[in-house]
Image (cartoon, rainbow, N blue to C red; front, side):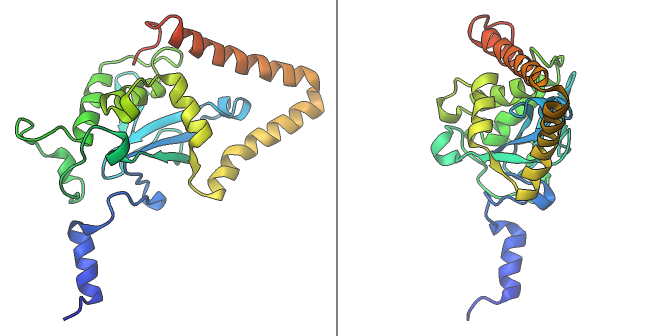
Length: 231
């Protein structure tokens, strides 16, 4: 007999749903890097923002303060942009062998001696490490946490730092919705329009200097003084 609609729904409930399915309504972004603008600073320098990385079940993890990693409570608002990682092609770490039953799969204590480390195993170690890190926007921030986990996951063979991570999100990040794009960019448009109207070239030069100083700091601290930024 053919499968009924009820049977199909039951199969999805017990774990046959698409493990890569993104659900912005529930803030679920499996195997993703996620981004949201920071108040004030992103309005002036729109390529700067707050980032997090997601578990296999789509729950967001982000380093949001000293010794504190947020779980399923993305700091600074809803996700605006995301990049989904193809775990089969871009990471050497396997995913879990089965789908999640709520949140229980992540909390289980498993015998890691009998299986390969999974995506969530790697993220768990990243959380444990950053729960003992002080937060500093210039030397140990949310980008440091995500870059650390990407290297732990061997995504695209590793080599991640705050600069190439920020560039990846800015250049390749997908907007969750058109509304998210408008909400993220509208404050920038308004501030720049008013700034140019009232301040002219002085405003443009000031914003350009701010962008250059911030970008220059992270580039220099990453590539010239490698111990300044923690990963």
